[in-house]
Image 1 (cartoon, rainbow, N blue to C red):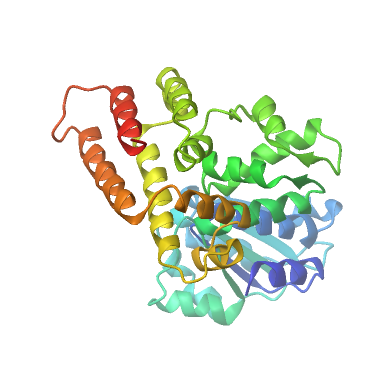
Image 2 (spheres, rainbow, N blue to C red):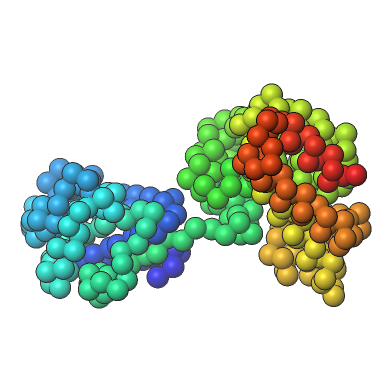
Length: 332
């Protein structure tokens, strides 16, 4: 079941006896778990009917005993096993899953991994209730996800601001959601979040960041690129060399693909490369600066400096020196 369908099912109070929320992306697991927690019981029912356990501190026997209990002055009980991936004997829940208590909602929040689908218990979870697989958002989907997520909390966000968050934070959705929450404290509902808001309140520079470095390189703006590199020299956490190399490799890989597309319109590039339309437009412009031969040369430079950053072939240079050399070679 997908996120939206499950969310609506919970809102409609169509509860199942067992829920297994599992997978690599913790944010969706947290959101759905909180939704069930907030809806499944009324506030006055919680004292006698809500049990919250933690995987590393509990075992299957305790979970089963709690789940088999009957509600007191309420329609149901709620048993929530947080960090269920830490349970050492989760397989011993099999007997309960074969015949779950219909008056209990048992939720297991199983983060960062999945129950082995080859095991009997995985099939029993699916048979007895609902299994939700929380998958990581792909990088090419991240800007769209940020844009849509911001609207769910009654804000808007500019394309450049969404790109800045995506480039600076990556697909750590919990952190992105946390940063948006910080902004919601100080910005009025309906505000369009821009890069100035992000710089002033989140601490990501709107001028000196990975996104702006990639932009400077792809537009052949050497002076701007050197200013950003200098900033990274004195703020190394803002621009680790290994991350810069990865970001620039992604840029040149995309530019090479653009050259071999028959339709180089921004709309076609956005669809073919699965990038935001704003990014597609910038790539089309950059492809006019970098021909395939230069792109291939630059990818080779990135490979060389990746090795140097790991001490292979150069064990003496500082990362800031390697960074400066690399960007100079890429743009000359």
